[in-house]
Each structure stands twice: as structure tokens, then as C-alpha cells.
Image (cartoon, one colour):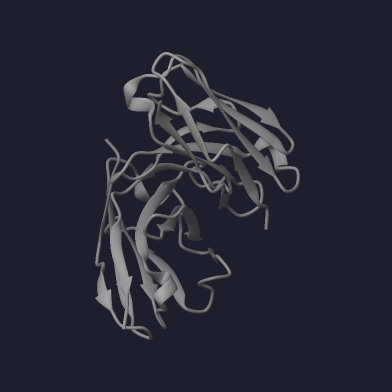
Length: 107
Length: 122
């Protein structure tokens, strides 16, 4: 099983700042098959990025994904109030596994 | 618009059985593989299983293999999760999710239902 480790566990930032979320895989992820999902309290997750860097339909361009191999990053430029949530990375190079999540909270 | 609506959750004792349903609309259901993903209270996400668009292949996580069975009825746009020999640790919100890769083997989740809560407790 490919284990994903996300860091930091919690990110405290102010609106307008940039958030940088990290996801490290225990082995190289085939064909950069990594996705990022956002989850707000009481809601289901929402797909933000797939294929490591492709934004999903309707996702604002302030969200961007990057990385390859074992190291992947989600960057959120100019945080808006609705961006404070928990973010999960997910690999689908072999089966499907999730990281433990990074909470982005208001500072 | 794509909609996925789960039902069938409830409270039951260890060793019991339950069948969850998910009805899909807003897309051609028979063109897409489908997944179940769960989330224990206050915890992260765990993939449970996948069924191919035509129902011919199914895959499960190690934690549910032999106890859970995924099926689908493409004529009714419905996805099912039969859960047997339930354990306390199966307590979770269960989400159905559409396979973002369509009929392919790219297992990311592009649409999620609202989820249904299953509580296993003695």
C-alpha cells in the first residue's frame, strides 16, 4: 500500500496569504496520479486537482497542484474565507489511498 | 448536474448486516466506474471499494474484503454496498463517489454524495 504523509497537520493563515500544503508518498506514484480534495465541516469532499496538476471543473485558478514522483504540493494563492477547510491528497497510481489531511485554519 | 444520493444507513449491533444504496443522476451511469469511500467520525478518508462501469470487476480494501460486496444496477442508475459481519470499527459515514477516470482505471473521485452514517455499537 502506498502511504501518503501530509504536512503540516494544521496551517494557520490569514485571508489573502498563500497556503502551501505538502504530500509525500512512501514510493513513487505512477504517472503522477495524485488528486487533492477539499472538505468543509458537515460536507462531503470536493475534488480540486487530479493528475497532480489538473484543476477539476469549476475550481478557481488560485488553486494549483504540482509535483512528481513522491513529492506533491497544493498551493492556494490569496486565501479566501471559503478556503479554510481540511485538504486531503489521494494517490491512485496503485489502488487508492489518502493522506491524513491538512487543516487550513484562520489565524 | 451530477447528483449522488446515498441511503440505508442506521444503527446496528456488531455482526449485523446492512445494505446501502446510492442513486445517481445527471450523467450516464453505465459509463462510469463507481466507488465507496468511508470516513469514521472525526477521522480521515478511507477507500472501501470499486466496481467497474459494467459490474464485471470489483475491488475492495483489505479491511472489508470478504465482508462487503459492491454491486450495481445500471438500468436503475443505482449502486449498492452490502455490508455483512459488521464491526464497531466500520462505524463511518459512507460516501458513494464517481470514478473521475470514467470507465478507466484512474481511481480518483470527481463527484461525491452527501454520505450516509452507519453506526455499529453494542
